Amino acid sequence: MHIDLVDRDQYATSGPPLEQFAWLRANAPVYWHEGDPGFWAVTTHQDVVHISRHSDLFSSSRRLALFDEMDEPQRAMQRLMMLNQDPPEHTRRRSLVNRGFTPRTIGALEQHIRDICDDLLDRCPGEFDFVTDVAAPLPLYVICELLGAPVEDRDKIFTWSNRMIGSQDADYASSPEEGAAAAMEVYAYANELAAKRRSAPKDDIVTKLITPDDSGETLSEEEFDLFVLLLVVAGNETTRNAASGGMLALFDHPEQWQRLVDDPGLARTAADEIVRWASPVNLFRRTATAETMLGGQKIAEDDKVVVFYSSANRDAAVFADPDVFDVGRDPNPHIGFGGGGAHFCLGNHLAKLELRILFEQLARRRPGLRQRGAARRLRSNFINGIKELPAGG
Image 1 (cartoon, rainbow, N blue to C red):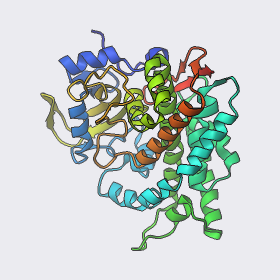
Image 2 (cartoon, rainbow, N blue to C red):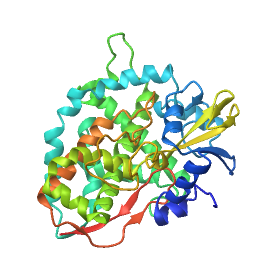
Image 3 (cartoon, rainbow, N blue to C red):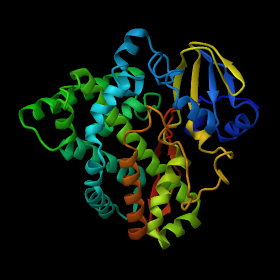
Image 4 (tube, rainbow, N blue to C red):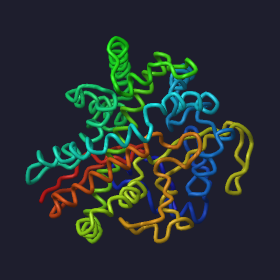
């Protein structure tokens, strides 16, 4: 079988290469993938979890967690972001940021999220685009709430996020340089937010993050800017694309949509199944810090190692009938939020809360919802994104 797991045109046309993933899991679970540079493609649930839980052997910092290569000055800047750090520096940063994501903080958002969903559905006409009218605005409203930012800023945040994630998609940006320019605009925006909170503190995440903790530690200006950047991307793109991918899955499996309509309480398990099925983040990169063995292959120090969550979440060794979309699947040990370890998604509870409430309200308020046109996918091997999903009913 011809193997190419990173062809962006393929993702734009048909999504993740599930047939290739299945062949690799069965025949070469740790596979040397040609490229510039070549890399080890890791496709089974077990091996992705192993890498995720061994930051000492598989570094996010040495060559960053992003697939594309960068020069050392770029890497040095990116290492200020938690995504591209290893313990103990990552542990320090995460402990500071955790103050803004306590169960109390997230739980307090439940009614607000329900109100947002109702408002979005109130404004949807008979036919609408599910991505731009529902899936995209929801996390943007929530991010504005978390940051204490004006709701009218959501359109700017949406544009910045598209330009950073979609730098290889002509609909969003024409070059990676435009993505970098968008990042600089986010940094400036973060600085403005921080300056406002220093002069007028509020009960929001920005105030928490610029206030020293009990031991006097706080985020530097650069660290804070990069955290806001991460929140704008991770807090927006993942939920947006999980919601869009979930709605598409329900359109493709009308019997599962009917189950949800008949029992909206299934939205709790449906949220996890949607994340497993859609796997909004397709891959991350690690770099081996020493020679090691994985899946019967010898990994050399500094080898590029890429984990594919879209594949691990279809692993029959872990999931019964993995190619069946089941809104009641329980247990569901998916790794759509990461395989555990240091980099397990900080906002996983918030994302699941948003998805649960959204699909509860959709099932209750729009039971006749149907797909009204072809879905258009993002040209990206990093984010499993959907750009358009016509809906109505």
